[in-house]
Image (cartoon, rainbow, N blue to C red):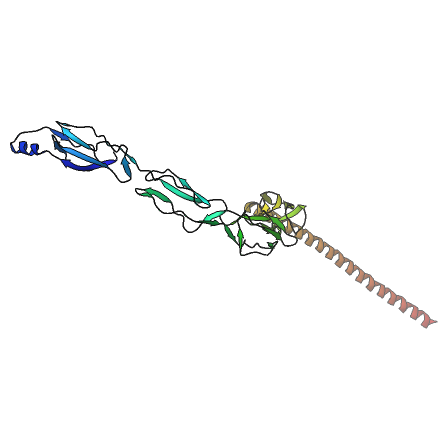
Length: 325
């Protein structure tokens, strides 16, 4: 119930009878929000009134009840929330309300292109009406737009911009503009959408033990692709075909994984054995060649010596012959 106990009234007759020791009928505590006596003697009167923020529905209705025997008479008083009335729209703004009764709230909202001056304050319907006062809305202003790397505004930047004013960007020569080139001053005082980016290409992928088998050579611009293949014995992890996007390579460059360690060791041993065998064979061939060359050298020396001896012998015989004659 939106009312409270106001006062209690007991007739003088009750006091007299009480002194005489007579027992009178009593009423239990009426349905009220305030803690009061647990019981009331016959003839007691209880008066109610509406709580703060509420008013009687019928101003002529009785606000009291009386204990008759062991029952209360019916209460005619009924209370309802007070109305604060409707709030009128203010200059360049309006209210978003939950209602116009006690406890309801009204949130101020500026028209599009305007913004509240100062801190936003929600108004509340109180016992004496709406609290606070109408706010002030002023035209939206945007500060200078942000600078971008490797690019600039088409026109010289201003200190502030009005609502819906536009600015445009351009990139340095040879670079790609990613995003919207034109931004507008929005209702919240910022430029939208986000400023563009000037893209100067993707970095050259570094993939050990891989070679490029498709695509163009660096530099890589937006939309360029490259395809890779791992060297023999290596396994590719990732995609072989990658494309240069605005946020880099898509997907990320692959990797070439070396064979497992055990396999590598076995191959190394096999290779060593083969190399050793090959070395021994070459050494053997070299020894045979050297032996052959050595044999040929000795034979030649012997032949030369014999030739010299024969020549000396022939010369001696000829000399004796001429002396005899």
